[in-house]
Length: 296
Image 1 (cartoon, rainbow, N blue to C red):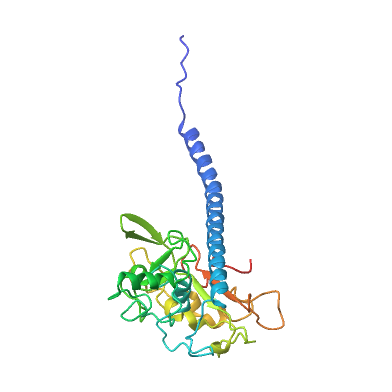
Image 2: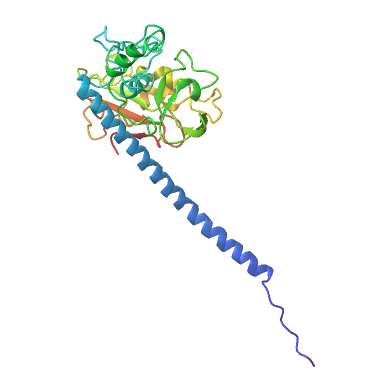
């Protein structure tokens, strides 16, 4: 009797076993890849903060102070009052200029300095007057090709509240929105929040934030626009920071602004200078993935 020849190839059981093993390996690998990717993006964001820190230091060297958080005619920390020019916009002006060609010392720190009569407006000026204007400027303190500076009107195409859409903010490295600028496609992240410390204050008070070391209202108009969406459309999502700023920003054990090493009372990091905050990969201020230029 002739012996039966065994057919070569995988059985169904063997194939299923291989598929299960591959699925297990992928399940183990994907979290590791995501962890490494997030670590790399966090490091990139920290590097951007380091560049901004150097730019702010250079501005302070030239003008004696950090970019302001209040209008020059007022030596107090003012209430929000619906201000259309947030401190994050002021930061972009200080280190780049409202037209990205350097900071002009005649700026009055309003959002209209590119309009008629403003320090950044060239309308009606002769070539010699334009050159004189540029010669008086300082900076830009950051390379504009690396600054991640974008107009508010490009980030939020449907709604920008009472903010001037032609003013710039610095954005983080987590590209959310794809923009076409000239012949290039670039990715814009979420605006970076800048808060200058009120160094004469000893408070972190959610009831009277205008008298606190850090005042959440300085960027409330910007935060109220919600997260940046890929198409720039209006978002119906609130940043957790704005939705619950009393706890997340000011209270001990809440948001990262508070230094956990000091337990006697709520006390922030860097109370004599400034802080920078990125919304992190999820684009929402107030979550655990936020990245700052202080703390851990």
